[in-house]
Image 1 (cartoon, rainbow, N blue to C red):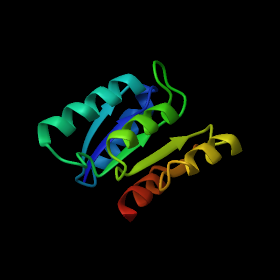
Image 2: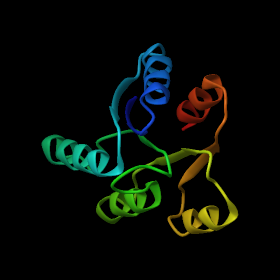
Image 3: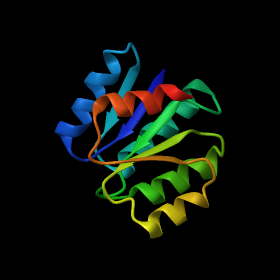
Image 4: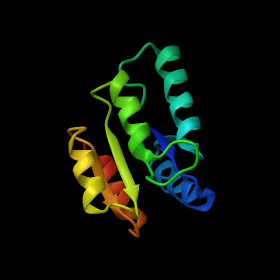
Length: 123
């Protein structure tokens, strides 16, 4: 699988990357929402693909662009893109907002890396 990660905590992003690459997935990490959107759009244009990544893993609280805004921007250009929120801030209001995006998945921090791998590989 080809996976894009938006996570501002470098150590956490590195943990995700190592765990997923150990399962032979191709992983690109970004450290804020703006960088993630830029990377996503660059890959979308260069691959001319409607779905340049199998999954985009997004944290909610990030500098420059939060995860909800990022997910809305990605879905505006690609409604079929699979997005997985991996966040400690999955409060009721955020979950309701995510439901508007139809099909966005979420896993609440803290979680074991095996749990993340299971969710990513499920689809």
